[in-house]
Length: 410
Image 1 (cartoon, one colour):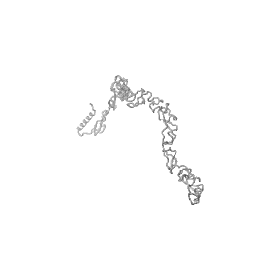
Image 2 (cartoon, helix red, strand yellow):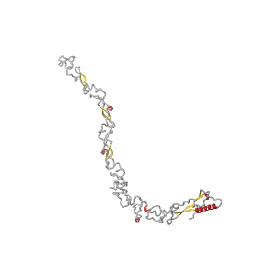
Image 3 (cartoon, one colour):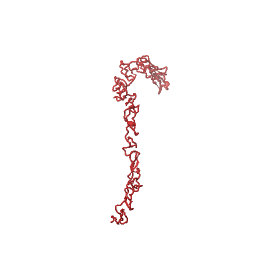
Image 4 (tube, helix red, strand yellow):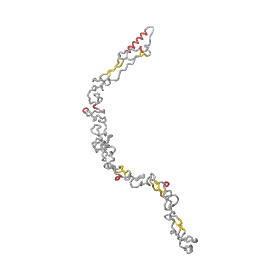
């Protein structure tokens, strides 16, 4: 192999030897500058002068890494050259080359215009593997049946032999059946409790009229399998616990009519249970019955003096404390009703208490106040015996004064 660097180096060595044989001097430095070493060639690298000696340059790397090109060095152009070649001889350069359109330059059967074959390759370089459009590694059963095509849906990468069977209404593994699925009513929707999920959305797989997308009708059924029964109407026909207004204007519940309307409150609306709110919830005529009193309503209570007064029931249906209980007006009953310390004020006397009354003969007696809070009349203010036999008075109104004929004093 011809190596100009080696020739040049040998020449320099001969020159050095010759010079050393010449009497009077032997020059030891081969070069003093880069120019002394440059041989003017591009393809063998750029020579350098290192410590007085010429050192060969690094040869240019012209390999472009493309299999479809022949790489070389052009001395006249001082550049690397890359020449595209038709590696498989099919008349098409590799697409790696400028203007090339061969997507596989190592296979003469693959190039634009080539006939597509059942081989999982893009034979005509159009970017599509016609026999495996979904690129799941399985050829179309329709296109390549004779060549072992087994993909029953070549437009869905999730459908092919060995694919997991899921609830989607399809034959995912191309075994001819929809395993673990059920579409009993044949409406194209799998039942919601399909063993394999996801995919089940038919809420009644026994009725072909019930499935997602079906029109909702007033029939007590969730026809479209969304948002519940009769969701396009006010309520679900025949279903109870439907809100309605009771006869006492509270919110009760009843059975939805056959026309999907709430029940008539005056006829069939069941009142709610009574709660503590100051209202008659259960329509029995009494507010907050079952509690001590009706919330925020006036109620009876016990005053600080033990009488029965009135106050405001609490929000929790409890009577007011004695300090918040207003006493009643005073009545004739022998009691201090209004808690002011006095009995039956406003009347003649306190019923049942001893008071002085005047007899028919002008004497006095001490007898209980009447139940009507009045002092006994003279006719009722009688004495059964003379009070004092020495006072000179006819105390008991029997017509005798003291011991003068009065048997009480004899």
